[in-house]
Length: 349
Image 1 (cartoon, rainbow, N blue to C red):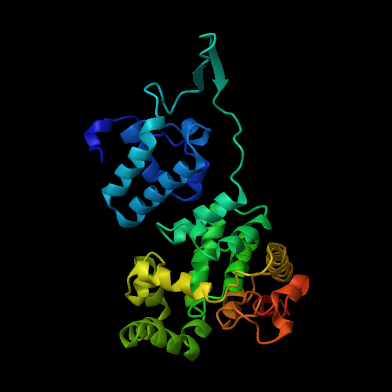
Image 2 (cartoon, rainbow, N blue to C red):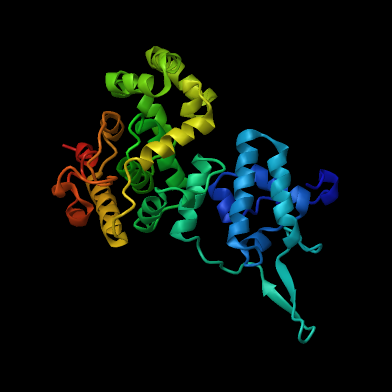
């Protein structure tokens, strides 16, 4: 790995950030990378850097933000440096490209409109934001999250990541993949954000739910369960303060290793996902969940209190042989059995 002196000092980015950096709230980390390498927004958003390398750079910056370890910043710099030209200046208004065949200088407008990220890119980056150092494509949930984003044209990395963050809290302890799709949809369609967790902590149904408490005990043991109960039994102001101090991270509230907790969530989802059904059936089921959630959640009234009570699964995603053919993927289609388990509770009466 290179030392910091290898790169030297460059100018800061002066507020002009790549969209993927802004979406992931990595502007401070981007400034650090610019200072080390001199990388410009135009170069990062161009086709010079392969998309896989961009994703790895983002992962390292996110890990640097999350863990505060300079090693990750240096790894990002190592990945970036081969693509940085000495004349790469962030504040320039034009990029100079030399055509080798004629040696003529071609002036290219730096405001070129680069294509928007694909649904897959958004899903991968959002997942990596909430599950640091993990690649969504390595897990069974990959196709489901990507299909959800494909059905949500206004989805951004930030809104999808917010939905996943909400899922980590509201999904406790079942972590039903269907509910993740619904919360991503609500986050995108209803603009739910981190403040929703503050509202959740004001909702008695969440903390006082005996099923949730006992499931935490069964999953993580008595000490973790007691910490969760202590948190829940403190007054609302104390809960909100603890939330803020923990940066809205449930693993920190529970006092358990974040990596292990993330593995628990991912593994729990994997037990509920069938990997043997046709892609077209999967597409139809996910589309149905998104459409039903979006159409029935016409108001944010009672959303938080109602989803806090949600426990089970509709069976939209099941692994192995179904108990009844009525639950089989092959006939779920657009009418997937009880897809409205969560969403029906969101109707405004």
